[in-house]
Length: 410
Image (cartoon, rainbow, N blue to C red; front, side, top):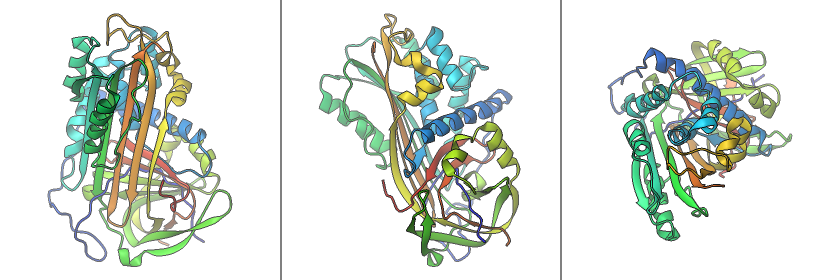
């Protein structure tokens, strides 16, 4: 009987020439490892803890039949940039929500600087772009120290715009977003909020090939079971005797599929029970326990192709995680403008993923708006599963989501 599996994954895609049973990398260079200082290594765990809190809260807020894809790393970049303008209880709450209370502000900024500098260069067959930008009203005064710290540590592009010319401002910002995500996310903003003074935006684009490609000729149609008891026809990819890590523990099937040169991977998790309940209980302890159970070996794996986009406003979720003050009239962002009177109006997040026989392509954008106050084992993913993409050496999670219906394109 085929095991059931839920998927938690992060994705990267590239298309290249292939041959049956595997794929020859375009570039033979094995790449390099991500090198972190001892302090930076200690931040991976808290960072993933924030990822799983955000993921769980996001799942809890959704309809049972909706696919999910988010990039907690994108959210972290955008909020961390914003936190450099916060003070007092606002700053304390943001740092606690992001699980970085044990680290100094400089240590956190240095950590993100390392990621933005080195993650894109780990594998020559993987394209990873991380871009940050700050857009502020031309008649609004921003403290130079705030801009400097975000340009120095986050490589943020800084531009002034005339927000009263809404059409031109939206075109400029959304064109930047589209360019940074290779047009996978054409826009992040639909309007300029009343009283808008600044937008802090992160964009991530990820594209890579599987270490062992799925043979497109072996792809077949079969039923995928839905949470409501129904089924849909999906295109299933299959790989026989693939070298991968897997585990079946306490009713959960877990598989790790490596991308080129094993620098990044996709983690798949499929529980025997309800996917939503499993996702809501997926905290750091459970994640680390399951990762520790992974064992290398040859396995057969079958999973659906899927491609979809997703967007969400994260205000309520971030408030529930402890950042309420940042969205209120009590917010203190006096390190952005000495006069204060600023708060977060909205945190918008959009993401896209395409998983197929060649690999994975994923993109995400997060915008923070600032306004004036206010047999070998066989693994068959044929029912709802969680997916996540991570950097393999450190375990840093880049994307996470749920596939409830692979036939849905949006």
